[in-house]
Picture 1 (cartoon, rainbow, N blue to C red):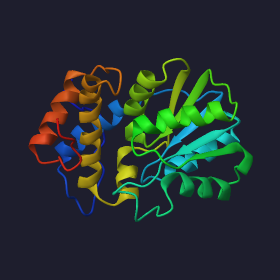
Picture 2 (cartoon, one colour):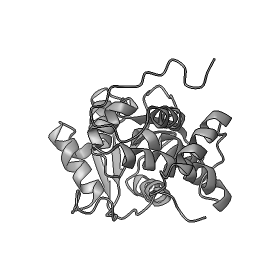
Picture 3 (cartoon, one colour):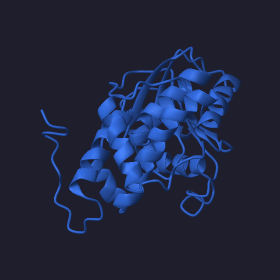
Picture 4 (cartoon, rainbow, N blue to C red):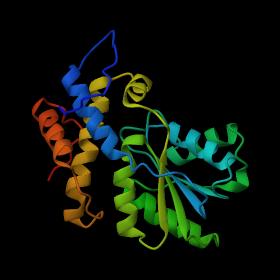
Length: 231
């Protein structure tokens, strides 16, 4: 079977990436998602970012009775300050409230500046408020599931971790962002972090299949590199 056989390439009126690059990006998109089935947990953490879909998904899962309390975590970053001037977690809370999540079910952690701090500070807040956690629903952007999982397993290994995100295909996510290259840059950047962060003690190691690594290499060589970290 040829690489990516069976993956549909959508019709895009304003194409900025090639069909081959879209297929490579789809491989990485699929890899980033853990494929967990959401189930009831002691608590949830909504990881701050530019993506308000995290808060929307948290509200949906709360209404499905999958957790009694959610921590929205995140301060400001260069990529979110304009969109969420009062901080990611604060805006997430406001959005969840507008979707019917009661205030008493929401905790806000407004200081975290990276994923490690999201996990560590949320853990401290849950402990301070007396919430016992033996299972955790980790809610993130779709392409951040694997990295958030690997980070949480490193920093908070005790609870069972279930990952969740807004149920979108790559093409739908691209449409929601409105910038194909930026989305592919973000996919490539997160995969670089999955690869590199275990070496720095930030996350547990994750196996990267050969076809995913090859797709990553091709996209890097094609210039999808604006979200890389220095190594």
